Amino acid sequence: MHPHHLLVASLSLLATAAVAQPQYAWVGTYNPNGEGLYRFTVDPQTGALGEKKLVSPLPNAAQLTVSHDGKTLYLASEAEKGVIQALRIGADGELTELNQVASGGAGPVYVSLTPEGRHLLVANYASGSIAVLPVKADGSLGEARDTHQDQGEPGAAKPEAAVEGSFAASDHNGPHAHMIASDPSGKFVFSTDLGLDRIYQYRFDGQSGKLTPNDPPFISASSKGAGPRHFVFTPKGDGLWLINEESSTLTWYALDKTSGTLKAGKTISSLPKEYKGTSFAAGLALSADGQQLYVANRLHNSIAHFRVTADGTLVHQDDVWTRGDYPRSLTLDQQGRWLYVMNQRSDNITRFRVAPDGTLSFEPDYTPVGSPSQMVISTGP
Image 1 (cartoon, rainbow, N blue to C red):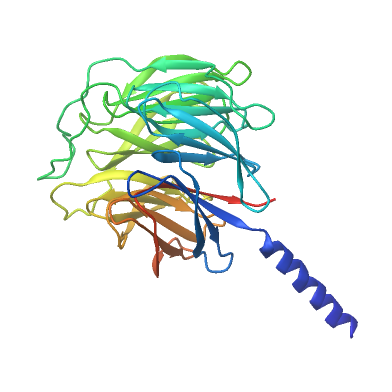
Image 2: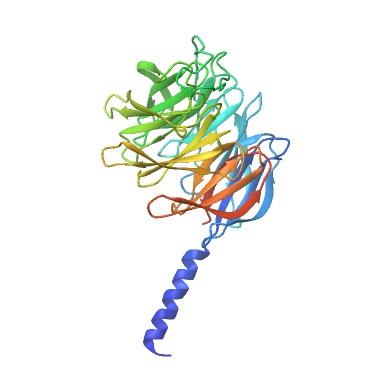
């Protein structure tokens, strides 16, 4: 064989080896339509999901995250006595349970790892509490190192910033922690409380796993009854975008990297300006380069696409029909080529190709799964 052909052959073998590394999509669901946690393979070329398998029967196994090295999966049962499972991911995608611990409250609705991966942060919706669980060397979890109970007057029952005709009001009857995450530096932690219309601010000690309320300990939502839900940090960690569930608004918060405190900036609607009636904003996803922001609107059943300009301003690009009902969360794949939508009420996952400029185009291959809540993608060893 000609040396040039040998080189081409060896390069193609390398390319095949790189592509051959299996990717798995893990999908958490709600009972009864969903029966637990499902595993899918991800086609490296097309992004299509295949080989569906139920891999954990944990009830209402709706919230999950994967360790930074892709070896451990953390799965929350959104039950009255919340539990978190730590599961080892084998080379073939098989799961082995490491252990199971209490979530530090009731109804865990969000789990995230700190940047160094040594602590798991949990938001417990039903009890309105947050918890910090230590991650041991083998990936298993310890009992909560710290817990904090949200307390205060419930927020306004009706969202003042919602569009005309909206009846999007829910759970302003007490504390309901909805999300918790560390900033990219690992020094600060923020949690939202939908019921109290607050964003809590903490300083975080990565050694002890303790949270100390910052000054001020919380800030109010951008409008009364807004229902702060999920947020995403910029890649630089100088701020975050937060979606308000009841008002269907998106608020920018600048983050002071010294004090770890947030300052509210501009708020815009996540819905088209013509829209009237009820909708509940849900998940959001930011591209790795921080230039494209996508928001899920439940009832309007759309993905709002915003482009982030150089000065951080959001410019509305499009409203894309999800092809399903009640999109609860959005997942971008690791290369940012595909966007997956968890359509909770239509019991399916839809997939969109992401163009270099962030534009979405629907790929017509629905993936059936009962009441999908959240999806994370891991790469095999």
